[in-house]
Image (cartoon, rainbow, N blue to C red; front, top):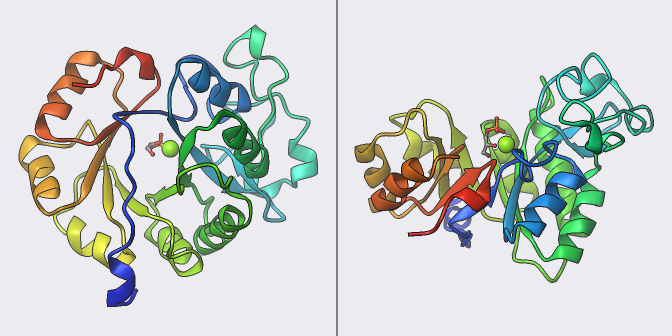
Amino acid sequence: MTAETRHLPSAALPKVVGHRGAAGHAPENTLSGLRAAHELGIEWVEFDVMLTAEGTPVLFHDETLDRTTDGTGRLADRRWEDLRGLDAGSWFGPTFKGQRIPSLHEALALLGRTGMGANVELKPSEGQDATTGVITAKTLQESWPANLPAPLISSFSEKALGAAADQAPEFPRALLVWEFPADWQARCEALGATGLHASAKHLTEAQARGVIDAGYALRVYTVNDPAQAAGLYAWGVESLFSDYPERLSAP
Ligand code: G3P
Ligand code: MG
């Protein structure tokens, strides 16, 4: 990244963002999950994007299909036409039988109709980091609904995020971290990321205040407990990702 591309438009997210749609209410990363978030009155959702074998971006979290569909094996080994028939809802509950793995295009169309913004998390399967960043960013450039605020792109994969930055420097970015890294700021600068998305499990108050004092947007996942949320908001955290977004009230 060059010096000019480091300071990019930052994203302004609401206090609560639906995690994987609204993962406590409907199967994660499905259209029913996005609809559930909208019905709860949620303004922004987060979801994960992975590529199929031929490079179609779809909403999916795990490396393999086993936990959340009736398929088995790696999603990245299967073509979109084979994945479309899988049931991605029954594992969550019988009323969701027949929910499919949505393509990113289908999800974007639903966002446009509902007016919800989105944090698009790049979730590359093994070895697909750069390709996932480029294809997802290109899809967002081509098909992001014009009525919505720009999408926020995030990833644990710095390679994927860097590739997305090169493809679409106009979109705000955030680096995702699990254990809080001492060199978080250098990593964000290298990626032109204006936000840090940290795990609630590892974040301390001193770390949180350090990020915020440095001028970065700090957002935290995954928070479902209102008391924990109140504490994080008191530290100055901008937004929380929640499976039950309706439980968390803004300060
Ligand atoms: O983007 C926030 C959160 O979704 C990151 O973790 O594993 O739920 O994608 P994960
Ligand atoms: Mg995610």
